[in-house]
Length: 159
Image (cartoon, rainbow, N blue to C red; front, side, top):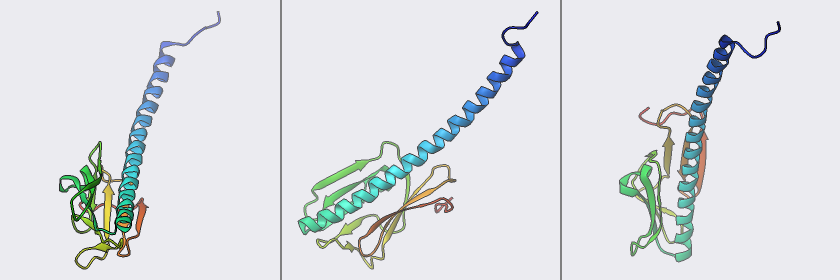
């Protein structure tokens, strides 16, 4: 008599392989999702700095970008310096780990130049919570240019 269907052993083996592949896929998806969110946050922060500089140039007034609750990882605000008018606020849905190379605020003069004592630029580094993986950096040069950098090999300070 010819056998039809599968044996219990074959079915259990197939389920074990499917479970293993699902577990691997879920962890890879979680890592990819975190990296995409980190890159999106870096783009949003870079755009906020560009917008602040443009607003300073257009209004011919100083503009300040400062972290929400003194933590860049919670979000940031863009304000006119002379009257404190809020131009833009961005709060992160999920807090991130962002390390600033110097200073707590970024200021642009009415001419769009970064201001500060001996301003030599600032780097805002977005670190992965787990430590390993790519790092995103938003770099504001002394001339006011904003760049986005991604580095697979660098590790954040404190890791």
